[in-house]
Amino acid sequence: MRRLQERFDGYLTILDEADKWEPEERQYTAAELAAKIASMKEQMGRLQVIEEQVQAHPDKQVSLTDLDARSLAKAGGGSTVGYNVQTA
Image 1 (cartoon, one colour):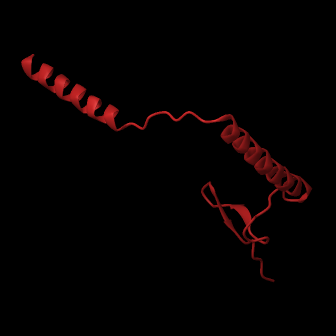
Image 2: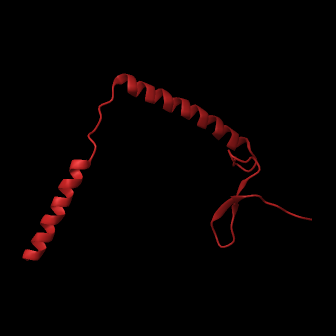
Image 3: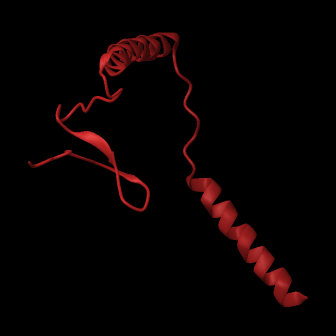
């Protein structure tokens, strides 16, 4: 029982030490929050444009880094991004 209590006390000590290193919560100003909201609205606008591109595409997918790449099903399940190369 004593050994269990020692382990428990050690665990509490570790938790107390970890609590000392946690960052304090920062209070944001109204101007900072307004700037963050404006940034998020701008990002939502960019994402809306991308969603419209996806919906307009026949495959319902658009690669932002390589326009020819597509998400392809792999044998055995799953998927990978690649090219559907077919030869005659």
